[in-house]
Length: 469
Picture 1 (cartoon, one colour):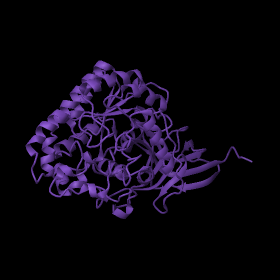
Picture 2 (cartoon, rainbow, N blue to C red):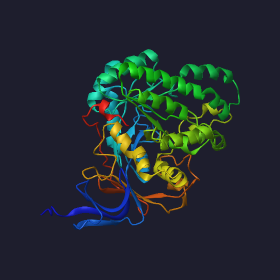
Picture 3 (cartoon, rainbow, N blue to C red):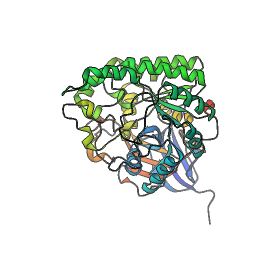
Picture 4 (spheres, rainbow, N blue to C red):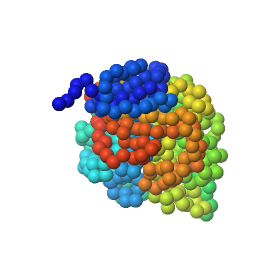
């Protein structure tokens, strides 16, 4: 007989990171949700977890990962990718529509993506992006109705070749797509770099036998980001399309977006840990593992991004986890031939605590908002996801703030154990991750056996009400 007064789990005595403060408290869990938060919970429980001396944070909601299914063979997939996220304290992710064959640009392709996810299983919950590409306007409504969280578009070449691959949109396709997406009350996420500028600057390096990381960076200057950001902000203003700017690499672009937001444009901005951790000089020393687009910029840009976070001008942080088979990070003397993407989703939470909280003194509630609450709100997963509150899913990460360690390849859960952060020393470590009240990762036992993460659809509120302030 069921005991209605019995909790499933109590997490006792942790430093609980609530939206407005950090407090020592107990968290009671029942039927996968948070049932009580109190200084001392007196109800009995089937299990008790001692969290004394640990931070207890809402599980990360990573809005930007690339799990390369279906059809990509030896690439990262749902099983290994979600394992890495669980090990890093992430309990929900949103998978991008490219890097799959077929890409998720119509309802049939979405069905194939879901079949791949169901077949592999996911350790934590997930949602899916749809794609805006040339000539798929007629597919957007069906994708929205089938459950995609929003849409993704590229203003520059996505880096894939071959029939059926994801393609960038020109200004006309982008503008028309934004009009359609506005009517669907969905968000459009945009990779904002000017293809025209990139192509023109790349001509200088065509045919060279040796092309370096500095050469690559020269073809994707700050001007390419700023030009694209200005254009798509104008389109958002004219179409009333909810807009999300992904992986912004510069404070100058953040300032443009902030000004547009103050003028009433429904826009949010994301940056990534690699732009907050590295400089261009460090990226040059690291080499191929640090290649990404937009490229990692200078010290001024890095510190400017941290300043904008402190000022509340950046809405969220996401990993842009974009792994590949190891051979694709080998380009010899041609850096342009190397796959452009950074593998690092397992380290996002630890990096933000280390660099943001320990080094720069940013409060944990601010970091939790960037990593969890803001993406859950923006993409319609709130109030179920994104914060520690009664009634929310018991998606929690326990972090030891005194666990000084060096990240090694054997710690990684990725299909291919390579990471731009391998060899880095961290001052905090995820020791336990719970998804809907179930332990999916512990430092002691590793990844659990269950892969029953749920596919999530946006809550029925309109995208216009999901503005992050």
